[in-house]
Length: 112
Length: 115
Image 1 (tube, rainbow over the protein chains, first blue to last red):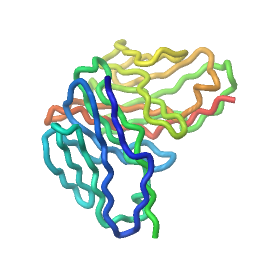
Image 2 (cartoon, rainbow over the protein chains, first blue to last red):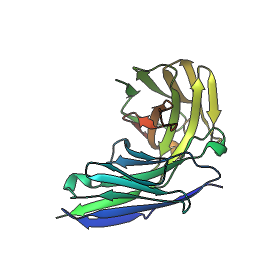
Image 3 (cartoon, rainbow over the protein chains, first blue to last red):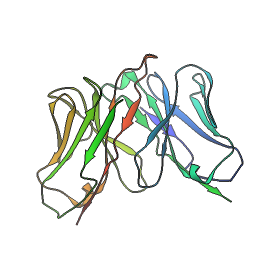
């Protein structure tokens, strides 16, 4: 089967650092994606990891451990505009015609 | 650069009425195309997936259907809407990336309310 787990909600303070975790159990693995989705809008692509380690892109970084089925998204120097849902998705090539499996998302609230 | 369009942006329809949502992609050829639904407070549910013209894979059996009459056009339809069809409908496209992944890029979405 396929399962993606993320915390439902998180709250963090402006200027701080927050880590959003994602664990997955899938038959196969060919990459993990993070998306940002502001309320009422479509998801936008943030990052892609296929090898173990940390990928850094400005204030956002994403980490992957394939052996642990674990990833995190790290947001630094939080800004109010970072308040959004963050979706973790795994590409499972063994799942036939379903190329990405999405988690339910983590709703992040940034407070002053 | 690639762009993806969806229309309409918002739609209010009575129960039992038909539905047609359209999605088009520009700036790429032979994309993979997807229809998702996102109900309030829930995750993204993949509805249909297409790798080429006339090729549709259905992920969830329901009263919706999809068609791909042209390479960069994907249509979501229903003959009779149900209340449970209300939600945020998202079209996405992807192409194989150089790293072997398949990043999906989403359109702006259509918010459907069935009354």
